[in-house]
Image (cartoon, rainbow, N blue to C red):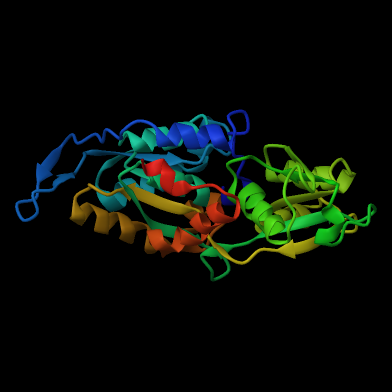
Length: 306
């Protein structure tokens, strides 16, 4: 699943998304809750857990692909599990902010945005090839001679979706660090998906583009992209993988069981949709590298909490 992310917020735009997340107060569902006598904090131990998955394909497809995850979690947690797929990232963020999701699988940027208004915490990220990180790449059209940052000047740069981490936020920050600013030094176009970016660059419809490195490698491996027609201009530094999150007000014992269920998961059939070898523990500060991109692109995530 992770390598076919198709963020669907381009119609709203990143600015509108920030406004959406920045308004309203979370109203966490505290049904089946009890008060911790030591801290007076309200904790929740629901009989059914709502588990949200990324809307990278149709809801029915995502749910069908993760039926084994549903069964695994039910067996490990001894609770009913309901898989939930929102129509887009903004809907997923809104649902989390209102406490409607007990567990949720976010992208790095959407997690950072959701965290500003939601009572959630990151606890696990997928491990692939021994790492819980991934990179973005900037690619260029070889026939057009685009093989350096300088060549992108006055050209068209393709991105996936405005709320994408590896197909917008990361590559745009890489260009900014090289002194290339959108509209001043190059034009941008949003195509909605990583594969669309790679195809546009291959065909010369865009001279350069940014996308997830694992997705690009997968497209080359499958023969979707001809490596003789595109060149990798640069790859980013590592960024933390897509995080699993849980409501912070869940019962502590339940939270421990949830974390263990993921970090001890070894069943290849359950892991198959994620194309992962397993899940590693992760914490909120691991996503500070994503927050730092806000300074580069003049996106003040801190304002979202006001």
